[in-house]
Length: 129
Image (tube, rainbow, N blue to C red; front, side, top):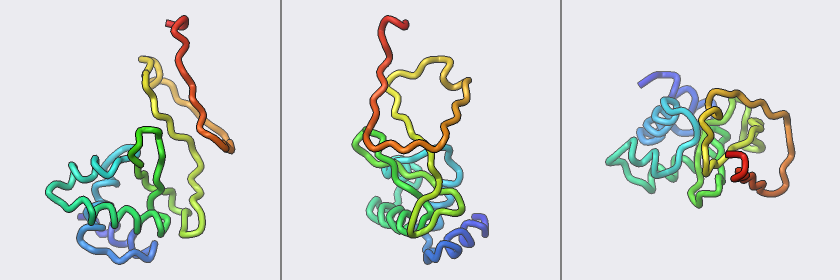
């Protein structure tokens, strides 16, 4: 395990327990947001409650943020370095896609700082097929 993982926890004033080190190490190796179940499967046979408590501690200290993507299970993603206990500064959008067009992954999208006050639903028009 990388020494930087322990340093990341200490920088955020998080006690580097064995489980917290494992959870952070696992998250650093993944791309994108993860559910509690994703992390639990990746760290089997680790205890689900202990993983959850680690994630909540990370969130409280500005190391991860949680995302409600509409699936009913929150996802957790690593924060940018300047997030803290007061505010998250990594403004970006998350999409939950029911249909993924083939060309979506090959195209990069950039979003400026937008303020969304409600959930937005975008549906594919069947006539566009």
